[in-house]
Length: 497
Image 1 (tube, one colour):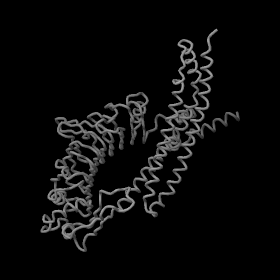
Image 2 (cartoon, one colour):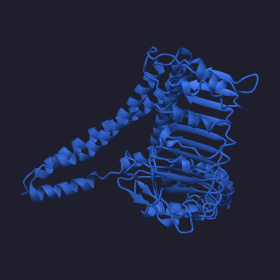
Image 3 (cartoon, rainbow, N blue to C red):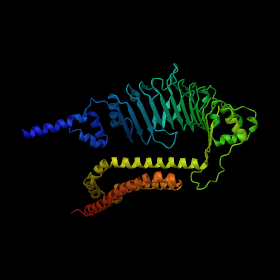
Image 4 (cartoon, helix red, strand yellow):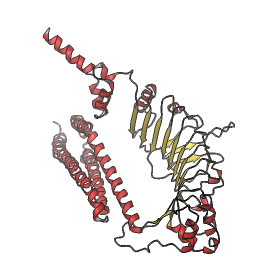
């Protein structure tokens, strides 16, 4: 009776854990261990609970049963946030059924490719995501619906507010249509396709490295913030931007002063203006265009000029510092309201330091993610490594040797070589990132370097520990299997009596 009572108490303690706590516990273990844990109690495999967030990285096909089950389960349990990354060898196409949900609010879809013209993910032309508010797409091919009704790909995403397209290919008959009455934030990066944008509620627009975009077709009367990096040939604005307050424009090699002046005229209502130094140089080369014109910026509160072409590896300044002629300064500042706009010129050294700090932090973040992933998969990897497939392999080799009388030692060493090169590759990647980070840190001023040095030191210690584990595993593999294979080969090669 006592044992039964004790068992019931323990079962009640486990079953009485709140769902949030159960999910939090399982989020810290691998999928394999989470499945094993589900046998402890039915509460740990509760099929009725809603799923708030799913993060999935797969190297297989999207139609493979495991991936389809995970996604179907998530959608059937009212998932609100999904982050999906596919690393396939060939292009894959998402089934239409996966883009129909009444609960999804945030979706990030990422493919992995080196070439924007060989994207790994292709989506269907129609999406039924009524509750989706934020959509981030990286390395994805999108097909515009281009229906007679004028619908675009996102027309049925009624609550979409934030859209980001990076390294995406946009396919449409007459350009790709981004038409949405409620979209408030749009980011386009590293693309080369024509885009037609009709977004009456758009407030924030970011365009970086997007070639071939015709901004003349953008209708965004409520735009309040614009960040643009590219050529002025692609930035042709015709809409009056009465609500525009913040502008950051970085033109690559502007050479036409007249086009530059016409572009700046569209920003006459701006309050906070950032321009790269190349724009200032372009204006300075043709001061006759602006010397008799009043400044268009009647509401300007802040002007910042910065160099965009900066050598991040230079130890000493090799480029001339930013200067501005009186005519250009008057054209940009004279109409600003009293007591006048604040004017800041950023030096090359300041830009170099800021970019190097960002680069170092990004590399440390990438390396930390790699190390965390390795630690997370360590248990699964260890279990896989401990699987003793040698007896089966040996029997197969023995049968092969008896029939063909070969010495397939190279084949038997394939597994060891694969393990070695995989570990060697991971180790080289870790060392390479550490060396890059160290190189960047040496270029930073002492005050900025000190803030990152402790994080870098901790990362080094963690990396050394993981590399030691990799080496230990390789030693174990090389110590066991060659001896085993050689022994079996010797036995199998003996003439049969």
